[in-house]
Length: 153
Image (cartoon, rainbow, N blue to C red; front, top):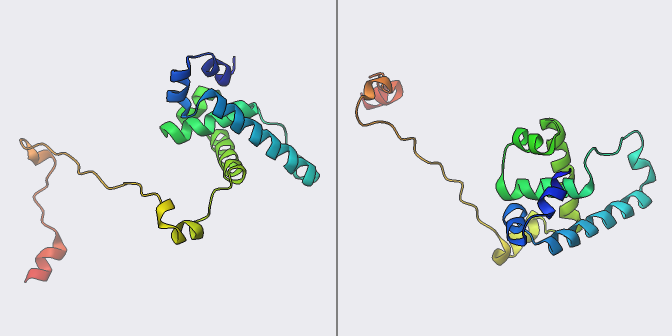
């Protein structure tokens, strides 16, 4: 059984929590992606020359990409869920994400800079490492920073 068939049989609330879209939105996006691929193959018939068909169906590739964007697991974990290797998982994710950007006509960086309301900010600040208050000896060698002691003298 493919991962998409497993997830699609779940409750609608669970599907939204897993994928980030409703089943109807997922199907709509899948149809748009299939239409984009068909149009691309008609316009560029030689682009598939020498390339085998993907091991995953289009629904599974889309599910994998949306699942990665929603939960951000490592590719080795994502590959284990879908039964493929880590490198193949990354390859499928990269291709599908590029196709989704083309299908949805996402604006580029220049357009986002011109329209400040459309700009998205993501907090990626660093978190301090917690060190124990007692028994610090294992974490601190007692040496001072050499550049700081030279500059103060």
